[in-house]
Image (cartoon, rainbow, N blue to C red):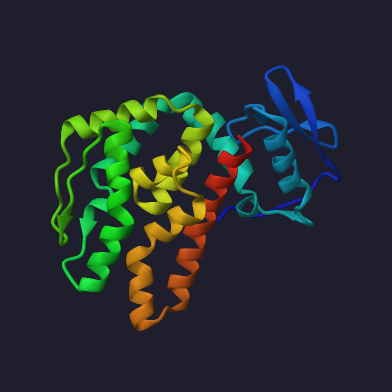
Length: 233
């Protein structure tokens, strides 16, 4: 976690910029970690980002500013490394969580089929990406035609939505779930719930420890932040 910095400003505001909306701290424009202007595409998102800066206390804690971090990702990484990010996202499709099913117990198998299969069917209908499922832990190689179709779907997404897609895919372990979030097929809460289906089942049987609680909370926060960004776009 980044070391907190002492707050050096009093007021965070929004100002119109040449290509969108800028965030000002006591009148000075905020920059991304790569020193690009932190310029947002619409007023609603800019106001929400400014709100994150205004809500900081005596110290600036980046982990409490998820929209600012997502905006920086869109500007610094997606904007300059789209092809690399797209390739990484396709790899999530190659090992998509929804394709790996339990062999037992029957209750978990049924829960996976009921929760996950409709999303794989949706991906096939929406993107012509028919992914192969398997039971157990052995890896399954996905058809190249399906991965190419997912790649085309990703290529059509703008930088801001790709930032949300990237975070959601990493947190959920599923490109299909992340695409469903971007497309409005699922809410962020639904994506988190489906991505944690196995873990939730195990918790029901055996309970949950503090480390697992913290891990799940962090993943949920990432997915909810991605969903919030999409809502504001």
